[in-house]
Every structure is written in C-alpha cells, then in structure tokens.
Image (cartoon, rainbow, N blue to C red; front, side, top):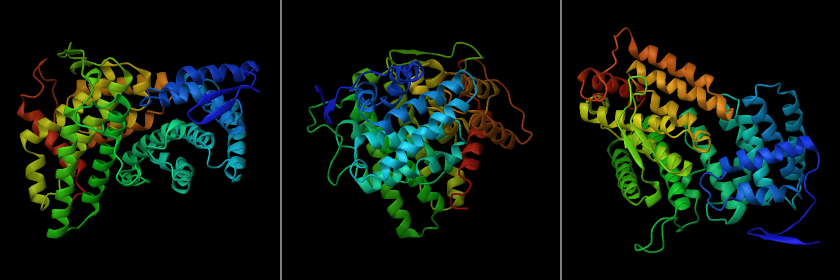
Amino acid sequence: MKSTPTSQGAVPVHLPVTDPTEGFFMERYCTIIGPWFDMFDSKGHWSHIVPHLALSNKSLFRSIVASCAKQYSLVARESSIFALDYYNHALKELTQALDDPEVIGSAAVFASCLLTGYCEMIDSRSLDWQTHLRGTFSLCSTQGWHGLSGGVAQSCFWVYCRMDLLASLARAEKTSLNPRLWLPDGASLAPSSQEQSWDSDSWSNQVVLFLAHTHNLLCDVRKSSYGTADRLRLLETWTAVSNALHRHEASRPATFHPVVHLPPSSTTMPFERIVYVSATACAATQMLHLAFFLLILAFPDQNAMERQVRLTSYAVAQQALTLSQRIIGNSISNRLTIAWANAVQLLFTAGLILVADNERTALVEVLKDIGSATGWSVHGHIESLNKWWASSDDGVGREVPPLGRRLDGPWMLQRVGDSLLSLSADILA
C-alpha cells in the first residue's frame, strides 16, 4: 500500500469517502471547520492532513462528520436529530479510542477529542464550555502535549488552548491548563535571534499565551485579599506582562498591520473601519487588544478607593473605550468567518463597557450575523449584554455623540468609568 508522508509519519492512503451524506460533511469540513481550526496554523494541518488521517481512523472520521453535521444543522436551521445520531456514533468511537492504550496518545485521538468538544460547545451556553473541554484537558495533562510538539499534535494543542481560554473568560475563572505548561521549560516561541522577524503562527500563538497570562492575573487580583508582599508580587507580574505585551505589539509581522483605516461612516456604523488582509491578522489583533483591555482591570490597586479613582479617570476610561471599540469594530469591518468563529466571547467581554446606543446596536447586529454565519450560539451573550447594559444605565439618559466625536464628551467617559468599576466590583471588595 502506498503512503503519503506527513509530519506525523506515513499515513496509509485509503479509498475516498463514497457515502453521499458523509462525503458532503467531509467536504464541508475541508472548506469550513478545518480552516477555522487552522486560524493560527499556516501549514493547514486541520485542512490538509487531518482529513487523510481520518480515512484510517474511525474515531477521527466520526468526529469530523459529527461536527460538520452539527454546524450545518445550526446554520441551515434544520432538525438536529440526524446530527445527534452522528454525534452519538462519534462519542462511542472516541470512548473506545480513549480506552485503547495503543492509540490514546495519537494526534488523531487528540483531534477527535477537540472536534467532539467543539460539537458540544457550539450551541451550548458559554458558562458550560469548560465542562465540554474536561476530556481534552485530561488528555493534554496525561499525554504531555505542548505548544512545540510538532505537526498535527502541536496544532491540536493550540486549538485546545484557545478553547480553554475562551471558556475561562466566560466563567471568569483561570484557564484549566496553566499557561506556564504550554511550552517546555526554557522554550520560547520567539525568533532565535533579534535580527529575525516573528512568523505569523508564532506571533499569534504568543498573543494567546499573553491573553491567558493577563486573564489569569486578573483572576488572582479579583480573588486575593492581599497584603503588601502579595501586592508587590502581583505588581511585578503585571509590569512584566504589560512590558511584554507592548514589545510584542511592536514586533507584529508586516502583514498584520491594517491596510485600511477610515473614520466611522455613519451613526449606524459608529466604529472606525480598520481592515486587515487576513482572518489570522484580525483574530490575533482582536485577542491582543483584549489582553490590553484586561490589563487595565488587572492592575493590583492598593485599596478600593485607589481602584475607583483610577478606573473612573478620563484617561483610563478613554483607553479602555478605544480598545473596546477596536475589538468590536474589528469583527464589523472584517466579515471573515474564520475570525468570527473565535470572536463571540471576545466581543461580549469588550461590549460590557459600551455606553452609546448606536454602538450597542452595532455590536448586537454583528453578533447575530456571526451566529447566522457560523452556528455559534449568541443569544445568551446578547441577552446577558442587554441585562448588563440595563443595569449599568440605571435610569441615566443616553445620547448618540456627533459622528467622529465619540471620545470628547465627558458624559461618555464618566459612564465608561462607571462601567469599568462595575465590571471589577469584586476586586478588593
């Protein structure tokens, strides 16, 4: 039998799928789901290698069919009964694979776990996402996968890290897998010398790592009742992350800079139009901006009064609002489903401090568009945003600022500061 060389070794060439329905879903995987998972993998392991691995691995094949059947049923608004049947078959095959010591450590089983988890997550509440990732977390922990494993396994690992991070953001809890374990001791994603530039994959995955560190720091600051020594430790961590984020932003690949930067076009499109050339650049930039946003909240203030003065200052409010607007405007200006598939929780988090009605409306509309295009459940996020906004308004009147003059009104910055304070209310409470 002939073999096709891959980064995972020789993969047997099998006859292609001949069942029309399964063929439809395999094709859909190659053009939709695979590219989504390849968002930060320019080598395209999920799009190009995983389908061939699936031809010789029942668990992976059933997971591909199930994930595509589920996604199709959601975007086509068709009955999910057939998708559930495919999911049950996939879960049965995966369970058998996880019980087999000869295959449990394979990249194919790792990919099967992720696809099954995705199948469960796509239409569930964001608060339940972490539950659907427990099996993959266990697999990562026991098999020792990391961000430099190579080939399909490495690509799988970074997909899991993104899923874990988004689920953790939704629950306001630390990532299940400590970011310090994402790379082997002493290893780095950075270029080997200062003369070299970052490649797009490494730069993007480093952003995910920074966002995880920032989010986990915020969790520490929120949950800690700390004394002077603890505050100095947290402040040292905050300073290190802040400096590293700024250096990383300055080192972005040339193709990750925007090619169009225009002012808001109308009161119904109140965000700047900043356009990037790729979904990878969109998604990585969006996550970078959210890391800076969370960094504002994660500063370890000495006490509640210091926190209030800092977060309600016009300078901090303007900084946070600008980041929020860029995160949201990114998804509105760059209507790319690969980036959209990663954006729902990021948009929700950034949208919590919006004040103007037209900005809120634009955010809700793009969330609805993302739900229609990708199948990801957005109704819970929209409902939660509306409840949060209603609570933060508390009878205060709102107005739409003049076009191009969104940040010069003290009323807006005052309201943003109040929202930031509410968002961090459990810090040093």
